[in-house]
Image (cartoon, rainbow, N blue to C red):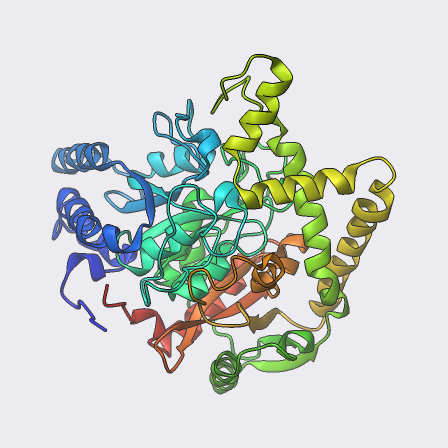
Length: 490
């Protein structure tokens, strides 16, 4: 393990911002430092699907010129950021790590990209993911398997594994991902970073390639809660282009980080600490609970009885929505097109050759569950169970301010270990899925390491649109620990 104390890339985004403000560092110096590290580290990690080095350097030079001439610059001026490759950046390929979109160039910016551009962030590249965000290990990418920076024989988590690995290995100070059933929090836990999934509707989904529209939410990866608060403040807020966007005021998250948690009521769901939880993960969680008690928090055991149905509900609802969303990839409108003699053959071969195995599996599951005679038996019943899961959280939050759970049942597993067993892979998200079904905010923060030096994550869940309390609780824990400061020796 190497802690690069004095290097630019080891500074947090918040620290980099302050040094750029005081002109101790230039935007070009910062951008160059991260791009140089990408050249060294990327061949070992495979976190990116494409790099935007030339435009990043040009943007950095323009920002330095603006600063030199006294012009106003944005909140994220000169800060490099990596973007998951299912978010549109105009003029840059959006592949979703799928052959079917391998040569597709985005014609417009996602709303979060528009806001980042307005804040003068610098885009260093697009990051790898499980194809169309369907997976828990980033092994389902059509192009490459991203490696975990702590052990390159292991997975980084998924589907946002590229973004998590890029931040963990100091190739970017922060990154964006998307979370449908844990796809930010799970890789954040396995790579030792902070991953935030905001409340559904807090961040515009316009320009995000849809997997499951009622579950998807764009969120953040970073090394500190200050960085998370800074980035969330930039991308959050109402967007009239997104019908699911909530017109709710966005707080200044960075100002509320120092709120005391003395007297805060933290609920511990008993269903999350039953059989199947790795002993080292449970030990790290118990130590975190003890620390929170020392800080003055009160703990309450709560029950989420319908948690047992979460995996089943998710793997009906998400594939149903996926089968509808992915129907547009037919070889006619855009993307890959198979060379065929008639239209029906073109539909069939385009989808057969363009989609990977996991995407096909979920399309078939969803199409079956939505078909005549099965809609009520599966999809309709799943939506009713989803409502019960949401009600469980509402009841729990009558007693507690936030909930504390493991993020994942185990540390990162080896590449290929679960790829032949879809059910075992799906169980990797057992602690994160319910949050998406209920539309709640959740954050994963580092809370320890195993004896073999693999990161362990702790998940905090909050009330709708109360990211402030989550960030405050995470920040107070972070100030008393040093897990987030560890850097893998890539």
